[in-house]
Length: 131
Image (cartoon, rainbow, N blue to C red):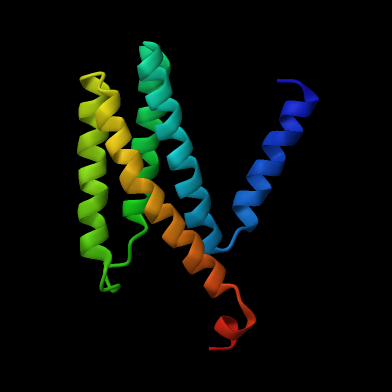
């Protein structure tokens, strides 16, 4: 690994370590969507090794998101169900080499990502911090 790559990795590590909880969730969702998009593109190109890698990484992110849910939050059960569905569907899409199922996951993830970005943005406003 050259010096420029090490510097980039250090920057990414610091960004994660210094991020607020809201920002961490949005970062995970951004990467999740990127992985699913890359996985779908690789499936459509017949690049099964890349598709497998991207979809497995997406599944790891979903596991991290599911593990971060607070049982005290009223919506955690519903979101846990969505995460379980996404995981099952991504596994099936990967095993079955089915880009359509991967696309279905993308269509579920994108609005969730947007909602988390909106929530994080609202939480970072001065009025929200005073509440």
